[in-house]
Image (cartoon, rainbow, N blue to C red; front, side):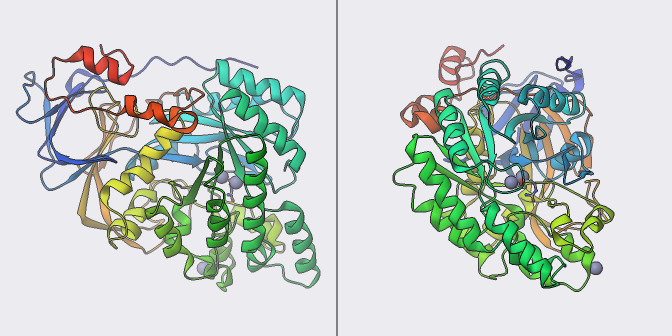
Length: 509
Ligand code: URP
Ligand code: ZN
Ligand code: ZN
Ligand code: ZN
């Protein structure tokens, strides 16, 4: 077991440590303003009009463009060993692609093998990511089994390693039973952490799969047939009931269906619940499992599956608009066509997972803002701010405000791009959004003050990203009344540093 590499930041070379973004429309979750933004050493130092700026500052003219907080993808699997193989995207290729699409932070899942210590797995993931990731990252930690040791490791991870979220599985052969879920949720609550669940009834799925295979249904359509909506909705309901018993805030990852969302929503009055859906669920659907070409249909296999009900993507977008669902991840977990072939004769052996890290922002803009279902501010909330709040990164991340990290996207809503595996930056050889033309293109992406996408040119630096601690007892989750004191306030008077330090609870240097 080795300790994580402590990286020396490759930081901000002289020409890049000062940046002024002028004339753009700044979109935050709560307001839209016309302001200039001055950045120094990776932090937003001034906002307003007629700012007084030091000579030699680089100026980007953002006239006619939106300026958005960088996307935060709360659900990725990079360099992940799963179902007998390993994802093709690692922390370099994955975060490079993320930046190309306007995402400036990811939260990946540490995945201990069954029986492996959570701490060992955490150190392993730090080694996979440290020195590789091009943007900041944090970790959720999965519980692939339950024991007293796991309980102790959870405490150490929260107290010493900046982890505030744990994912439990209700499906796969490493799923926890109800009594283990109860104990795990109880421990999350004690620690001030967030419990996350993969909600599908694993026992029903295993029986269904056996029956389908026995009937000769071996292709990717069997994947969806073995995991119908009610199997997802039942598990969501059960997870909410268990969380309620121990008063534990619950975050349901990858909510993929209308009925699962309804099950979640039915508990929202009595339990603190959050629902995340996926770019995949908005941008494509389960009809692809019936595609005659194995590589095409297997390329869409993830769990829970895409739904054949064609009204699902629009319904999920509306749930995001109404705050029935709060955020959108990618669940990026990419396998090449050759890896998907592992399940050629048996759908249960197709490695589960799809792309989305690069395209999440464009897909949500196209399906949400371009259609008029959500405003640009709501777009910011579901792609960035809500993740920052839930995982206690706000207001350092998730907003454009004085004192926040300069993770910023200059977004051209008038431009379009057509998604394709031929042109994407991910390592994977398939794209579930192939051929989709999206309005909304990231033109500049600023990561901790560094211009990493520069007028469409990708200029990332391997290892530039840092691990970011997620402290427990996020006010948004555990004490919403405290949120008002965190709200960034508008300060055009740049000298009022005392006030900024107070409101942001951080030291400005
Ligand atoms: O199919 C999926 N979702 N693959 C990644 C693992 C998980 O359950 O999130
Ligand atoms: Zn999952
Ligand atoms: Zn094909
Ligand atoms: Zn996942």
